[in-house]
Image (tube, rainbow, N blue to C red):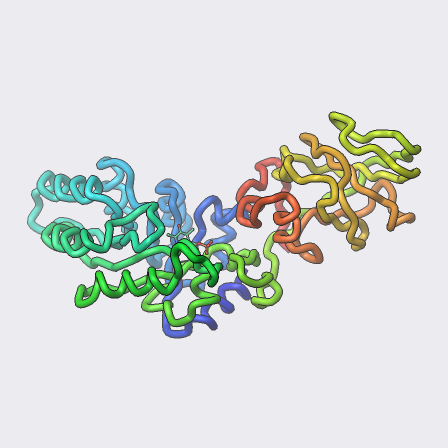
Length: 351
Ligand SMILES: *Cc1c(COP(=O)(O)O)cnc(C)c1O
């Protein structure tokens, strides 16, 4: 994770880095993320309770709530713990205005805010045409200290996207914010890696810090190292005759005699249930494939190429030697989802 943070910096040497640790640091543990990213300039996340935990665990540098606050009551928590907040809608500005009139103090403690522009993704943020008015409204609130300017890319990993390009979002953002005072941040991992010119004052890498690709190239091609390796063992072996079927639904039927290994890992561990027969897996370091339906606590794998494998053989579901993105691709999803879905019951060992 430290190495990957250094890679993020190499691509944006002039920028400061918000290391994104939302969703329990993409499944890696919030405290572990905080320690690994000690060199980051700040930590960004979604969860307000997680942000408070960072403070309680001793993180003293900036913390940014990437979706901001949700209710007026959250504002006290933000101020008390010195949490910076995205502001993406009029309702949030109204809550800030009401809070400052209620506080009614001569020297109210301040709040640093990040005004979000919807530059083309149409998820959160103010339209370019509404941006200056939102900025002025925020500027007039005594509680509001620094205003930073942010936007988020829809397709930073996809240079070919015909509907909304990264370049068009960059253009809209700079045009609609020109002349406004404040630090600017645009780039997620894909922006950091593939659009170095967009770096501005801060970048906000997430997935790349954990060794997953944001798209465009493989993690290895980007020089990233996997942070999470999900391992297990073979706990049973079956010999299948022609016509024998494996697992729930008898979905996989042997066309020739086969040895099948039963691995102690299933969807209750976060292994994707929709991973089809053929999803890659390593047994004793050899790449083979899953067969049949993923069940709650087990998957079944083809031992045809690994005749010496048996009970106790080491299995890698993803990570070192087997990119999480390969597994995700086979299962029709992305590495992000697999990392975030790692289940509570999986025992975490730090290498
Ligand atoms: C999650 C998030 C990021 C990080 O995105 P990655 O694709 O994981 O790098 C950056 N900015 C915002 C606002 C986010 O919500």
